[in-house]
Image: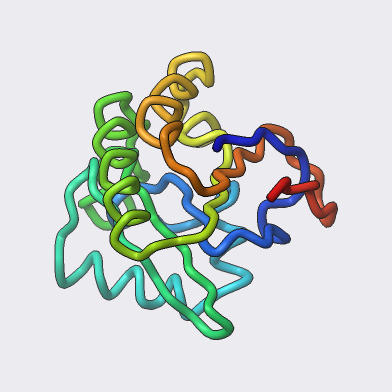
Amino acid sequence: MIHQVSGDILLSKAQAIAHGVAPNDPFSSGLAHSLRESWPSMYKDFRHYCQTSHPKSGTLWMWSGAQSTRIINLFTQEAAYGHGEKPGKATLEHVNHSLRELHKLIDTEKFSSVALPRLATGVGGLDWKDVSPLIEKHLGDLTIPIYIYTTFHKDVAANEPA
């Protein structure tokens, strides 16, 4: 069940927060930056994972922290491999593959709910009208609540229907 909500995704009551990044992403802007500030150990573990595993765009990596915090990093953007390089833009192909992987992870982990932003439309550069149908395709048949944060309001908890 997909629900579009407005508010601050960092205040979500969902069991996991998924967002789009690039392999080797510096988490220097947007939601990624906010996640880095909220959970610095997640970013440290992310850097280690990228340096040792060399993930491919179109996959994902999940981090589990204290108090059952789960952050799912969807590799929707092209990687930044060179020192000091900025990540590339997102592609619909990478979003499609990442969402397929997210569906599998939700089934495996038995999540009770997941929150996502307007995936790959900020720093990723994609148009929401192109991304939204992919979310519906891959997550629309799930019986758990999927909260899509369509409008950001800092420090405002969204009304997340059960």
